[in-house]
Image (cartoon, rainbow, N blue to C red; front, side):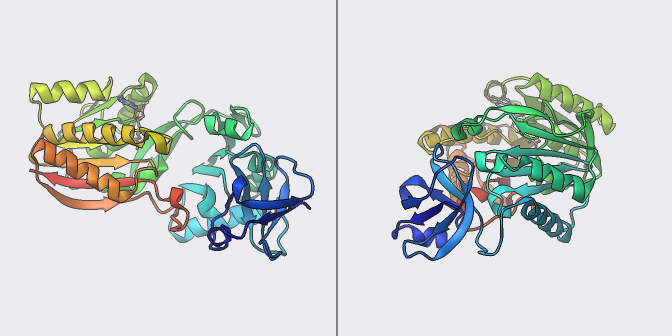
Length: 390
Ligand code: SAH
């Protein structure tokens, strides 16, 4: 097996548990370098660090899978890891739906698996992980006997690894429009054409967090996707709910979700650009009791961070202006490039410009099936804030 030796300087980060090894952190390589192969990593002194997969085409040359010298990377390894991840989630109380594998946080770099009851959606985002797709599917079949497995590898990041974008069935075809249950409601999920894996499981606890503040309220939700927060608001007793999303497909699913939960009288949806609507309605002086904002990541790169800051500030400022005094702003950010402290700063800046006073109700993160490792910064990504605005 090819041996990769780390430079002395960077060892500490890797030795402290980070699984990524960048090309410029490697001293020398002993053996052939075939993209996607498993290699062994050693310190510059020759001590065993771990085993992982290599890809010279990627900025991240090696991603470690194990630090156990005795552990071989084979089909049994993937079965063990999936079983371990499932045992962990069951311990936390998950029964039907959960993110089963959250990449690095489950020691499975570049692998995402969402469990929607009996259906599984997976993403293999690096070549070395993609190679094991067969073993991963076998493990899912043997642990869960699922009704269907689907790959949503139609994501641009795969191209950095020299991988094609693709999606499709991993096994027998099935109806990819499924229904899942969450917090007493039901939601249509379009596994094939929905965003990302089809459904945002990471907000499942946060959706519950609006229960009390929406009672009898007029609620506006911008960036509503398939209307999950909106339907929760209706279910928890809102007087009216208006959900906005730029995607027709999302808005159509949101309407079907409202019907599915007998909320079509309360929950209305419009396919519009939320930036335009928020701007126009502030000008018109429209008022709501609760405004919910869960926009997409405004940037994918650190260089464009200012774009994200500007975007977050603008929508939150407008959201605050649309609130009656004493109303609640429910606001989220899903990019790890904006850390929690910066997110709060942006909200504070928006409040200052809107001449509003804030009182924090709660500040949360992603649900527990997306574990956070403090030394792997991209595992902390979701910020979810509720503030009273006056
Ligand atoms: N809250 C949702 C997830 C929202 S994802 C949930 O929990 O399921 C962000 C959404 O913002 C996507 O549905 C995307 O279509 C939408 N979006 C992106 N840009 C937009 C814009 N300018 N106006 C309105 N919606 C937009």
